[in-house]
Image 1 (cartoon, one colour):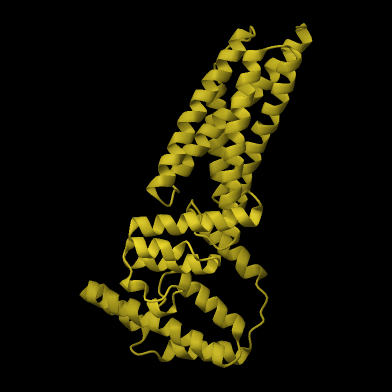
Image 2 (image 1 turned 30 degrees about the horizontal axis):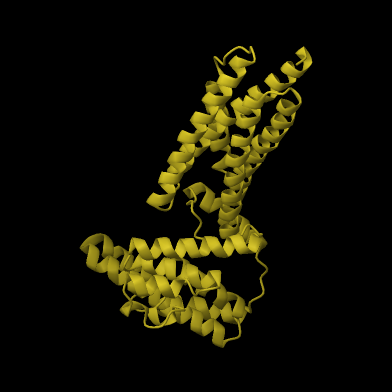
Length: 320
């Protein structure tokens, strides 16, 4: 093996090591955004596995006569910290695309390392490269699925941070075409204004008398949203009505009769899971997840619905 081969191989291994240290920090920051305990465990395991890969890469560097890293992990932490701060002002999908770019960098370099190691007849490094390729191919598929779930309306495996949610909303508001009629929108606003008692008054009462008034406020808000949806749809403002229905779906305030599964409230966990597996429309799955989380919050049902949504997302992206 020539000195040039060693130099090139070492340079690539060092690059992947530094990127892996960044990956570790990113995985740890994502743990706080996990929607479920299962996703939280998966992200924790990913961080642990990344640490093991970083150690294996470091060992390969030493075997090739390279100098062990002294500041590599610190560079990775700094890069991840900068990435995390930047993401606070990004829409959620852009943050995930950044994660996907990082994974593709490592994956592509791992493939290059395998080719270099094959040429240099270093079977130990070939085996390490294959390990990296397998791990990062799986992560690329997982992130692609999460992105597809986001595109289908979620809820994805990861939650938005408050700033990501706000920035995503701003982007949507800036790009939604104003297609509904002025009359339909006015009628919707009138419905909100005329819903007794006034929402602002109920809010003030809620601050004074506690949970009862707050629950009354919530019920009044939900009724107002449902009425507003009916009014705008009757007036032909389907764009507004669809937006209101989407909001009601996302916040879990649909009535059980509006769910895509009949007699939903009467189903036990096994029955609900079986019914969810038959759903094919991501909007239907989202409606069930939001309703379940807001009402019964049965973890087995929520997990099954999220698994179903992930399967639909994988079908859409061709990952199955």
